[in-house]
Length: 214
Image 1: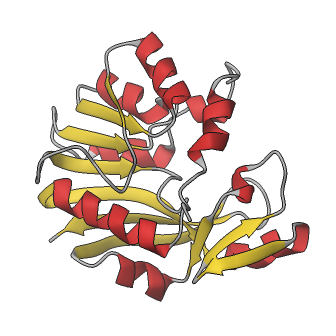
Image 2: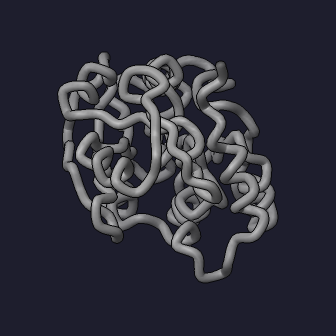
């Protein structure tokens, strides 16, 4: 059974994106991370959505590729112009080994089961140069009870859940993990930063992580 299906939901969302959507504003964490990178570094925005980070990073002078499995989001990036886009899945990246100085993937790689996640992290590790950084988010296990209180759900495999939540991407598999799980998943990386942070709504805990490829 295919588990990384959330792009179907997001592709529909990108077709009707509002001009004041939060998905058009780059995250402060990403801006702070970028401030420490070498000018003109080559960056992969994995799961770029409608390009809030890819477009901003390009404007700062970085060499950026925006990759996503949802063509609707890539179409928005192409309309804005100036960024190379690639339609592909996160666990089969169409790049050579060590192709990027850095990889960004914000609110993306936890959309799937552990098999998808492990393959995706292996691909991130493969395309990163040694010493390159990865910045991204994962879903915290502290979030899971809040989801269970709102929706009927079931665990389809270890740490991977789907919920009866029409109109949301929670109907597609999401992976929730504790810190020990997360560090084990990121074999071949050194953890530079890890924070379990609640987002704008109560119970929306996400891990914010920065890793360095060994």
